Length: 346
Image (cartoon, rainbow, N blue to C red; front, side, top):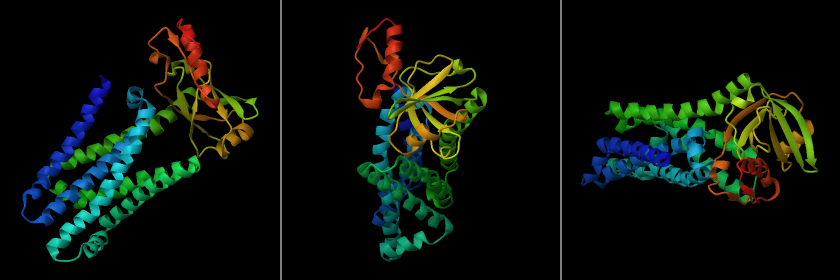
């Protein structure tokens, strides 16, 4: 039921964007002059570009109500394919407007494009935003193909926030669809506020609140094998946190050489109100630092718990748990939880 409600809200949000565009520019499509059709299509592409970018940010906002409904794997899958829609809309926006306005003024689309791009501070900022978005998608594809560092992927994606800010002023200042519609302008600002609030609450405020409230620190760093280490985290009133077996957290260790990176790790023990345990395989630079130079007493910034892979997914009295390598980490507490429910576990 939750999925249906969220889908309806998303479709309704997009429908309002299309309605606002139709009131402002969509009726140009009925004009005999083809240039108006290109202009209308270009404005629509710009609106869709921003709406889909905001959707991208919402999908990665770590909002519990979204993740617990769909699961991180589905959100990530949709985020991946939505990225291509973003790219197509962004690439189409400028050229379509250049063709339309160029035809009206009797000049080439190429010349009109550069006149639009350099015509004001707002349009120049928009061009920078487009360049950043193209860079993000291009580098992401390279990282996926070449398996480059996670830190590089994360840093490049962080530029998304800058690109959104650059595009915001451009649309409200120059967008014809907004200039004659108070409700559409208000709705557009509301979308930015809602998405920004989700990012602020779930990525910043909640982790900081938990750091202050629960005072989580590293209590022990224990080698399990030559390439695996367990990190025990203790704090105050941990029983009040909504942990479940099979879930993971995104942690940031506030110590020299580690504080500027956050990484996801599965919980490797049942929630017990006394401590959390993360079991990590040493695969890259960050995990090597964890195994060698993570001081006892280091404060830990925690986002989560995340993930819908929990005992509630088991609907029968028997369960088979299959994992490879470090993937066994979430299955250990999962097996304990299922056994505690009287299920037969293999």
